Image (cartoon, rainbow, N blue to C red; front, side, top):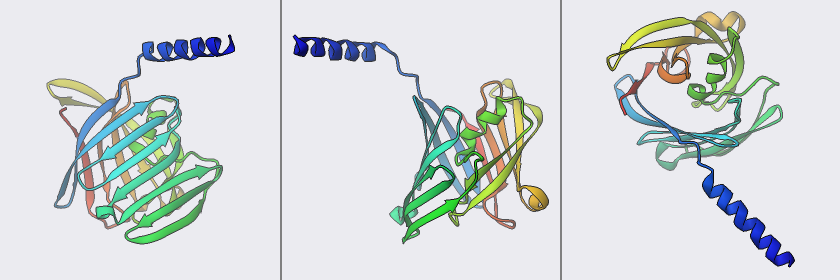
Length: 220
């Protein structure tokens, strides 16, 4: 009898699972330009108990897992023809990074505070877009050094542009370093309203003096 009840339970659970439609993935495409380098990028977000964003080009892949609040839980990178493949995971107020970085083993601990970790800012800044707050302070990891840095995001206002024959309202968010370092580095994001879909980016590809990078959403 117990076996029969168990079988009925799992059968019912399986039917319920099949009858519950999965939320469709969000999929967008972008063109990323840095100096003479041009890359076509696919941006795919899978939503569930956690959110999984895959940002991939022909030469690298970033997989970022967040909660529904867009705070990063983990980040995985594959690049440099396999010479770079590492994972980073937040545990309380520490981010653990392990794997290979440019052909060398990496195993390091980055100490942070209670502020959120926004590694995929094209996704995580949705939290600020949809909030009534005017700014947010968060942690992010520099890809070229694997060091953690605090960033300040500030809403700069709504701009209107024409795209694909339609007018779009875009919220511009400026990223700067906090405090007295603010004048030395900045970048800008634009998000389509009201959904907060990443539309455009412009900023240096690294520290001050680095080539500028632009990322623009394309059709598809």
